[in-house]
Amino acid sequence: MNPFQYYNPTMLIFGPGKLSLLAKQAETMGEKVLLVYGGGSIKTHGVYERVIQALQKSGKQVFELSGVEPNPRVSTARKGIELCRNHQIDWVLAVGGGSVIDCAKAIAVGCTIDADVWDLVRSKVTARSALPLGVVLTLAATGSEMNPYSVITNWETNEKIGWGSPLAIPKFSILDPELTYTLPHDQTVYGVVDIMSHVLEQYFHHQEHTAITDGFCETILRSVIEYAPLLKDDPNNEDSRSTIMHAGTVALNGITSMGTIGDWATHNLEHAVSAIFDIPHGGGLAILFPVWIRYALDRGTAPKKVAQLGINVFGLKSTDFKDELELGYATIIALEKFWRSLGAPATLSDYQITLDDAILESLADKTLIRGPFGRFQKLDRANIIEIYRRAQ
Ligand code: NZQ
Ligand code: ZN
Image (tube, rainbow, N blue to C red; front, top):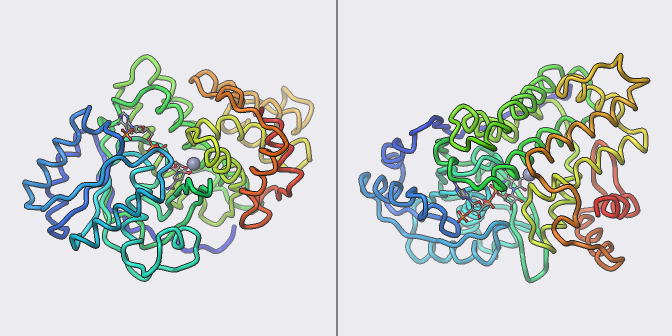
């Protein structure tokens, strides 16, 4: 296990019905709030009215930025920054999924710097302060509600880049599972795949004596595998929605990487695909993650760890297989079978995406902006192109 530091100051307010505590929480914040939300789901499902009532009850002056896109755009963050500057906003409230929260982070931090927010995302400038951020989560997936990360897309350059700052960690996050009952099934599934992928990115590491961190990872995966299928026929299942929401937060708030260094190549591969084709993040991961694991096994990188996953998460028995490698391949099949049983896509052709040589090169360029990547399995240009080919 590596030495580590852990810092996570988000006040989590978790539980069915807990949106009712927003007014009380808002009382602890400044007077002028920028309310950031997406394309309208919160209006359709009555969340917007409840949020506005809570903010009015606590005496806030509310300004709004609506229309944050899935795969949020830097152009939208710029609009929010302008609003903050023009109205001397005191704090930002994100109501939505990861895209809304990520955009709100870019606004909250970006409005304090003397440069364009894209320079912040590209790590060309470092922020020294930020407006405080509050969150009401409506989609369990990214973990953005309790982490320092944000992923922003620039449609002028077709780049999708993740950045992070401790200043962007939300001050409070209200996690009310009831707000996720209205999710369409495909968004629920993308969320589940994203949650599991975050755990897998961190589970594939080379550190040893990491029993607690590996155990956290395995518990989260087993819980998601047990509870997610219930939502197919029963989207209002409180236990399942609560478990998935809890899983999404702890899957990427630092607990699952204590003392370890995860891989994160698959996220980089996926971000390049959604930067060009604008597909849902979780859909891209469902396609690419099994390909990445199989590629690792083919190169002899990971049999022991994949076998551990198969035994501890998917309940496979080592005695049923010739060796770790055979067990590893069976584990990938179990993972694919689970995701497909939920309705996740399996190949890029499910999104009508075909990759010619020019697109393959362009995808590889985007993934390599910060150089070769993958800390568990290092990938060079040829490896990257091969993985994309296999994902078709
Ligand atoms: O825009 P609205 O109308 O609100 O609709 C949204 C959106 O269309 C809808 N939705 C959200 N809550 C709903 C709902 N519909 C009905 N009922 C509800 N309760 O769902 C759609 C997708 O929302 P989005 O926020 O885009 O999804 P998600 O939470 O999966 O976020 C994806 C973004 O987060 C980034 C991804 O790359 C992608 O850009 N990520 C952020 C991370 C982070 N900050 O730590 C890590 C992740 O790995 C990921 O990269
Ligand atoms: Zn993700």
